[in-house]
Image (cartoon, rainbow, N blue to C red; front, top):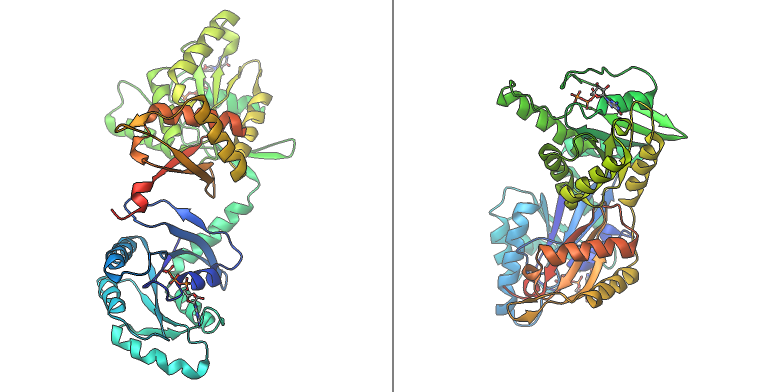
Length: 445
Ligand SMILES: Nc1nc2c(ncn2[C@@H]2O[C@H](COP(=O)(O)OP(=O)(O)OP(=O)(O)O)[C@@H](O)[C@H]2O)c(=O)[nH]1
Ligand SMILES: Nc1nc2c(ncn2[C@@H]2O[C@H](COP(=O)(O)OP(=O)(O)OP(=O)(O)O)[C@@H](O)[C@H]2O)c(=O)[nH]1
C-alpha cells in the first residue's frame, strides 16, 4: 500500500495530525529492525483511496543535541520505506535549524514531499507559512491539526500523488475481501492422490487421473460448494520429481507449488499412507510453514493399509513434520470416500483459526503462565524477560513481545512459547508468529 510518513521535529504536531488523518481507525506499533523508536502505523482513506500513514514521532524532547541524531535516523530509514512525506513544521514557532536539517535529508529523495505548516489556527495567519518556502519544497500547505483547517487540501494533495495502479490494486483487494469462498491449494508428491481426492469430492471425473506420476496438467481452479460453504481449489499440479525431467521443468513445478501455497488461504498437504512423510513432503511442509499458512495434512489411501500401519504412519508424519505441528491430520481414502467430510470441516476450521483475535489481558496472562511453567533461559549471564505482549492486526495471528533482549530468544524457547500459547489461547491449529522487541532497540543504539 502507498505509504505516507509524517516527519518533523518534536512538538510540531505530528501525532495530532496523524490522529486527524486516521480518524477512528486503530493504529498499531510497527516492527522495523534498526529503528530506534516505535513507529505507529495505520491505514487511512481519503476520497475512497486507501493509504498507510506512519507517525514517526515520540522523540525525547529537551536536549537538542541528543535528539537530532534520532530524527536524522528516523527520517533516513523512512526514505526507503515510504512513498511520500508530510513534513510537519510549526508555523507559530517559525523555521528552525533542525527543520532545515530534515529538509536536507528529504531533498535526497525523488519522492514527493508536502510541507504542512501546522498550528495556523487562524486563517488570517496563513502568510506565516510563506517563510517555509525557504526549505525548497514546492508544496507548502498551512494547516491546523487542532482546528481541522487545511486538512482536506493536504489530503487531496497526498491522493494526487498516489499512482493509478495503486487504486486499481485496491479495487481488486476490495473484491477479495468480499469473496465468500476459501481458497484451497492441494499439494503433495506426484501420485499421492491429489486429483483423486478432488474427483471424489466433486463426485465426477472432472479432473484427469492417471497411474503415471505427473499427469495432472494445466488444471484450472475449481469452485465447489458444500452445505453453503464455498471452496476454490487452486491449481493442483503437484511437485514433479521425475528422473528424466531436466532441471528447468522441475524447478517450474516447485514454483507452481509455491505459487499455489501463496495464493491459498488453506493448504492441504496430501501424503500417501503407503509411504509416509518423505523428504519431498518435508520440503513442501517447510514451504507452507515458512509462509505461515493454515494447513491440513491428509494421509490418503487408508484403504490400502491396516490400522496398525496407519498408527505408525501417523506417528512418523508427526515426527518428521514436527515443525508444522499446528496442521491437523485427516485420514482419507479417495477410493472409499472416507474422511472427505472431515477434510472439508478441517479446512473451514483452520481458516477460521487464522483470523482469531485474543484479548490483551488473556494474552498476557498466558505469557505469565508459560513463564511460570518454564522460565526463559539466561542470556549473556542475565535472565531473559518478557514484559508485555500484544496482538498485531491481520492474519495469521502475530504477537509482538516486549522483552529485555530480543536476540536472546532462541528456537528452543520460542517453540515452547509458541506451542503453549497456541494451547492456552485456543489457537491449536493456527500458524502463529512471534516478534520479539528488545529494550535495547528502543533506546539509542
Ligand atoms: N495551536 C495548535 N497547537 C497544536 C496544533 N497541533 C498540535 N498542537 C500542539 O502541539 C503540541 C505537540 O503536538 P504533538 O502532536 O504531540 O506533536 P509531535 O510532533 O507528535 O511531537 P513529538 O511526539 O514530540 O514528536 C501539543 O501540545 C499539541 O496540542 C495546532 O494545530 N494548533
Ligand atoms: N487405493 C487407493 N488408491 C488411490 C487413492 N487415491 C489415489 N489413488 C490412486 O493413486 C494413483 C495416483 O493418484 P492421483 O490422484 O493421480 O495422484 P496425484 O497426486 O494427483 O498425482 P500427480 O498428478 O502425479 O501429481 C492413482 O492410481 C489413483 O487411483 C486412495 O485413496 N486409495
